[in-house]
Amino acid sequence: MSNNQENNSKNNIFSTYTDSIQFGLDKGLQYVKYFKQLVTTKDPAELLESTEMLTKSTLDSQYVTFPHQFSNEDVQLIFMTRLLKLTGLADNFKIKDSEYVQKLYGVFDSVEDETFSFAKSQVSTTGYYLNASSGNQPLMYLNIPTKELLFNGPAIIDFFVVELKDTEADKIKAALTTLINFGKVLKEKAGFKTDFNVLDGVNEEFYEFAAGNIAEEIMDELFVKSAEENYILMADEDNNAFLTLNAKTKLIIADKGNEDQHKYGAFVQDDDQTENWVFLLLDYPFIRDWYLANSRQLEIMADQIVFG
Amino acid sequence: MDMNETNDQFGQNDSILSKAVDQKVDYLNQLNESINNGDDLKIYELIDKNRYLTEFMKQEESMEPDYFNLVSDLHDELSHHLSNRLIDYLGKTYPFFYYHEYQLGQFKIYFGNWWDHRMLGELDSINVKFMFDEDEFNRLADSFKLELDNRRVNDATMKSLADENENLTQLLEQQDQRDAQKDELRQKLQENEEKSPMPWEAAKIKEEKERLNSQLLELTNLDEKAAGGRQQIKENENKILALSKEETILTLEKQNIRSTFGSFEAFNDNNAHLYEKYLEYLQNESQVSDHE
Image (cartoon, rainbow over all chains, first blue to last red; front, side, top):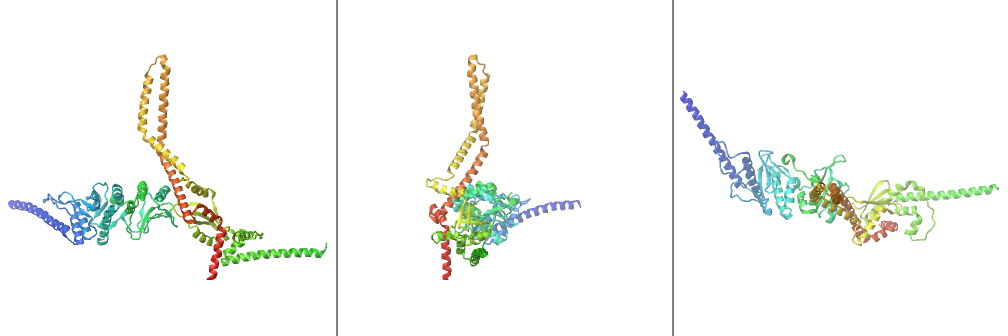
């Protein structure tokens, strides 16, 4: 009786042990299956599925750990580069060097000196920030299981416009276009909730300024700086200010609030609906200088919960 | 006194009166008709026949009776009526002027529709005349004049503000240097005080003390100036911005005058002959519509 009990409890221990190892191995096999799918599938839907499964799980278990592995941060980067490639949107964003199994970095063809990688966010267990290695704020937030993608305007401007100010505008725009296309395909094909923020090219997008009310001097400054570059800041019937930048593009500064509570911001209108706030800053240095010199009032804020 | 004669006298008076009233009624009828027919040219003739004849018809001056005071209480309404076609015409001939009817028949003239344009004066539709504000107009005239010497209206003020800012910036930058100098002076003062001079040296020591104190005072004065420096720099920057804005506006005004009239003189000349030019235009317009 006592022997039996002893055997039983030993059996229990052994079976728990083997079960746990089995669980760990199964998990590993499952992981391998999805990882293979992640790197080999030609179907964007399968790519998304495998990324989601990998993002939600971990490879290690209590009894089985693997010394060499890619992190979930790496998985996000693999997903991003492969999705861009598979959908034919861009092949200017690639994984820099996968020789080492430590950490993967992405790189844009046009801004070779800068590397990008994902990092875990504090906001959600499945949410990841895309960071520039030399920047200090996250540029983008990606959460595949919850289908969210948000851009961080102030960080994007700080990095792509200020830090990389010596890089040609077209090269920066090529990199940003890739980010925008990445967001677009997730929004349109996978139903992601997206916030393009300062990268939103839709004409109706209202880039709201942080200060709400804008001191008259700030508008005067734009008027003077524009005139120096032979652009004339005009007033329309609704008392908005606007700059005709070229035959297709117009910048409008409007107050969407009222006398008691002003809500100043900008619209960028162009026939192709591709111009966005950042492109404008890149294309027109006088607007960039004006915006940066008065950034305390003019800053276009990003989502405060995700990037706050 | 002969009763008949008196009657005649009164009778004559009545007929004069009646005739005068008839003329007035006729005048008002003509005015009314012209308003209803949209015949602005005729209205201008009725407003000031003498001017109409001399300036527009190029005839000798004649002493035409002035009935316009009959409608003196209707000037605003009449001005509103006349402004309609006048502003259309001015829109073509002075494309840079914009008008705001702030009360019936009263129009403010704005130069340009750029951000923060100037109010240049008022439009007198009844007399077909720009009533420019003297100060505002003179600023434009000055700007044209100074331009010949490659100068601008606000150059001197802007330069002195920029110079002041440069000095203040320098003062701010030299704070550390001044602090070191002050320490040195205080050290010397202390040494000076510790000296127990021989009587014949006392005057010299006292003199040295005074010199050191006045140097110290000079430095603390500079410190004070520097303390308000940042604020002053900001204020000056705002003043410079306001002046640059004014220059920007003047530049745009000059560009627009040149592109429409070729020169400031031609612009002024056109203003001086606005009445006859507009009436000619009205005449041509009516001839065109007659042919249609």
